[in-house]
Amino acid sequence: MKMTLIQKLFFAALPVLIVNLSSSAQTTGKKTTTRPLLWLGYTNTLQLSSKWSLTSDIGERRYIDNGHQSQFLIRSKVNYSLGQNWDAGIGFAYFQNTTSDPLSTSTLAVPELRPFEEFNYKQKFNRFAFSHRFRVEERYFRKTANDQLVDGYNFNFRFRYQLGFDCNLYTSKGKSQALSFKAADEVMVNAGKNIVSNMFDQNRLYLGFNYQPINNLSFEFGYMNLFQEKSSGTQFNQGNIIRFSVFQKIKLYK
Image (cartoon, rainbow, N blue to C red; front, top):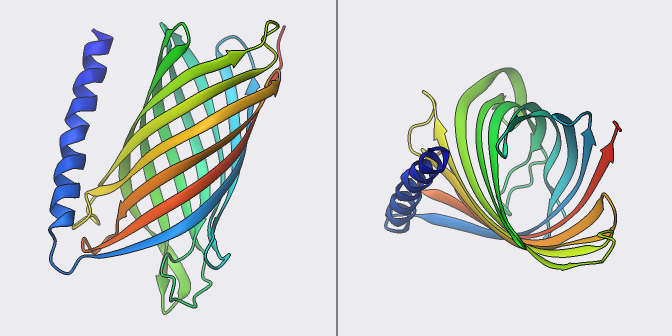
């Protein structure tokens, strides 16, 4: 029954993506800005018990073409195992966002406060594993005027679904070393009274390799293709992203 629900949600999200991408491609006066980016990140997971975990990460995202900052983020969440390969989480993130216009000289970093809730489901088949993440975000963007921050926040919801795939390529006999291939696709949809022309927010397609040299520490290198519709409905961002991440897990219970 649970798998049937997942499949329904997945296939329900696909038409939204396809329709929006198709209509976007045919929009008169469409403008797409394509830029290369570098995403650097560190993620730490504290396993508090057999059911509870605390995950925190920090990220720096920069444009490769001019070296300017794109985003800076700090995020933390608590997850609880529900059994049967399900877990639920609640968290909070702080972002600083700068303009994506390569011709802009603005250095204004706009704060975003982002509480979120999520459900995760994992399926394992020997060397293969599938993961499903359903996340709801409440996004508060600091208001701006004349390239300056002003009092107050704009608000909207964002709904995200991510389908992930892992393939184990190598594991040492002691399981201290491992190499795996990862792929994922994520669809994001906006909602709220401030959303007029961009119900479809973005799609992220990711391919990468994860190498674990020792237990509980791994390094991941990959490529992400990001396609995002801006609030105008006629402007789009295309990101070619090189991503390098470090993951560390620490077990705090016996």
